Length: 503
Ligand code: ADP
Image 1 (cartoon, rainbow, N blue to C red):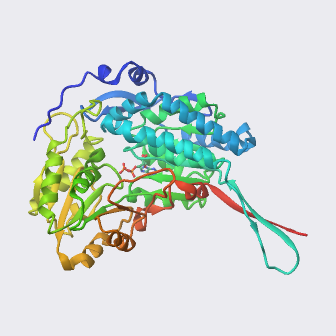
Image 2: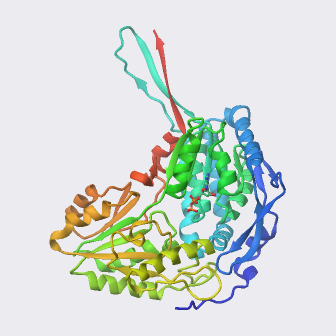
Image 3: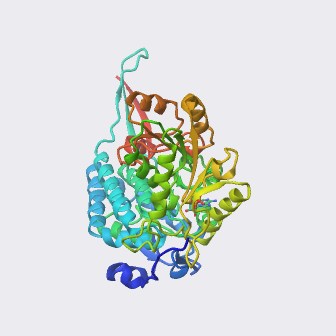
């Protein structure tokens, strides 16, 4: 398969506003100031559709992280932020949401360029999702109440609780949804009154660095949000191990999540983790295939499968197996592969050569051991880091392809018969992960009965990759700790204080 993609003229595809941002210097945002890394070093940003260098960003080290954390600490304790009430914080979050809404197209294009993901997606998901979360959390900032507690100790007491900001929060995000994930993690922290140091992933830092401009324009006091680009092992590790950071919110691989826990142990940071997944989808024989075919195909091919919740394993009842498989194979073959900035593109490249080679390695190993691909199975010829949308059938449940998080457009399909639903539940749950799952059926009671049996933070019925600012999102088992979104996210960024007075 070769991609029918055109060679992009980047400036034309990006448009004048996003082009101007791309060609301006990219700097860290610390204490309200734009700063190069202290060492002066930078590293390249590449366009994953071509492999060409398109910008350079600061290569920050631990000294830059120290500056950013000190700035966040000052803003937390001494600055105007510390004296603001919830309504004032909420207004700043709303203003940031408004500014982002005014620049939706610019951010959507920059994000598509940097991640390689289709601009169709960044417009549809990343920007509305970011704006929606800012607005939702702006609402919570005035509703972070304590409670009065009717205690039973002998005597007369007035006992109550209050919620205080947990302090300086480090936010480390991965490369797939840099802007949206940064905002999903920062918004509840800011609503709660915390200050933030954000480190975007080394592959995709353009939109989060640019976000600093909007944060300043919205009127957030200096130091409330600091943004530092750099590598995981240096800048990221410095942040995770920093003695003056109170909480860390990490989104990324389970492997690095473990390192974060170890690094956080030094000063007992509160840790929020949203990690990997190998999410199962179960299709019963009464599923509405008109809904299930595009739903299941999108669950794995959206963002080329580079989503922690991607539906990467599907179990299909044998009565509808052929129709469903034919449907998703046709969907895969019809995906328009191309540069993320083309409006028609539905499958962009993977983010980096490294990631493309990783996914290709899994596929080569699977092919070597006899896995059959109904479609795809290899990288796309030509420049850029494109992978064919791939559907592997009857995959051995012990194979790496089936067990490990691939982070690519690769779906493993298995069929089951009438008396095998218990086996399907066991197989769906037979993974170290437990992030997301979906069940496809028109039977109400079968759907909810199955939903109870799946060990995952989110179980979707007749949909997949469902996210909403009000809907708790997070993982069981090695998929993470804590829940993003909803009030649980606010709780994560607050300390609960009990106060008691003898009357
Ligand atoms: P992915 O597989 O999605 O790239 P990673 O877990 O490798 O996820 O990276 C997610 C984020 O974690 C990135 O911002 C990366 O720079 C950062 N990171 C990687 N290693 C470390 C580390 N040892 N300590 C802190 N952050 C890290």
